[in-house]
Amino acid sequence: MTYYGGREMAASFRTVRSHTIQTAEDIPEEQYGFKAAPDTRSIGQLLTHIALGPRYQHHIHSQGIDDLKKVDFTQLARQLGAEESRPRTKSEIVAYLKSEGDTFAEFLEGLAEPLLAEPVAMPPGTEPATKSRMEMLLSPKEHEMHHRGQLMLMQRMLGIVPHLTRQRQRIAAQAQATAR
Image (cartoon, rainbow, N blue to C red):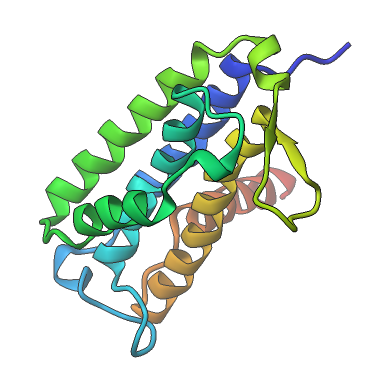
């Protein structure tokens, strides 16, 4: 039997967050205002958005909410929007990614299997009508990976080779050198 619970979710989330932090560190601060297109987030805004992403799920599950009709998403979005729009330096954003990531990973670590299996009612008309807490708690990692893909494209637009690509290139070069 394969088990995937709170500790495993935390470890996986930490891996994803560490790659996002490396991406943030690889981009020069003077490029944090870069936008891939008008009416999109800048690199700095996108990194701050990523840092805050887990807060929705943390709020829902730390409060034991079992029906999303009980969540005031307008108020929550207003609070997070204000936090997201606050200007930050590169070092502040990197520290924010670390602290917010640690908070969420520590929360995940403490979750027991019975809690992860609990159903949560989705808004009326949503299919499926319920999701397990575990499925919902996987979404911050998926959200972060989606946005990190955007950041990696922005890195390429700026002439920066993303760290995972550099890592893969080193491994391929080592394999090629060994094969000679």
